[in-house]
Image 1: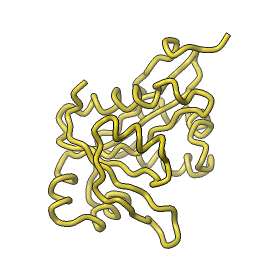
Image 2 (image 1 turned 90 degrees about the horizontal axis):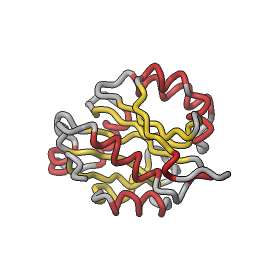
Image 3 (image 1 turned 60 degrees about the vertical axis):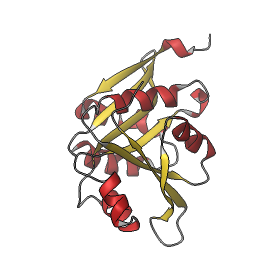
Image 4 (image 1 turned 30 degrees about the vertical axis):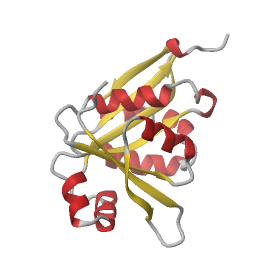
Length: 179
């Protein structure tokens, strides 16, 4: 029998719990290597304000989202900051802002509303944050539609994090999330 949307539970995982599920995370986060997940997730889990929400169906991870407080000295933060105007920096990267680092749903479970549920659950945990920022590929129409439908706006329309790399859109939205 196929799982239904209502069978998926959203679970908040502590950093150690998320790290213990790296293999499952890598199976959902399919566009990066297992090695990359092993390298990046522990670093992100140490950041201030790290929060991880898992979509779990009958014990299996079928999606996840995580974020943390952005700060100067973090690679992504500094790259995005350099691409922004002084006004954009003041607006979007002020003290306490959140970086929605990753949101992924298993391919077989897409189009069930899980991405939106993960998004809303994660951002609702940052009630004291002024803003949130993220990056997504400019060609990722489903992700861009999800974010636009949840109030995100373009901040930097095209940013390449490396020469010849795929362009990303930097998006921002005000917090707290109003559900």
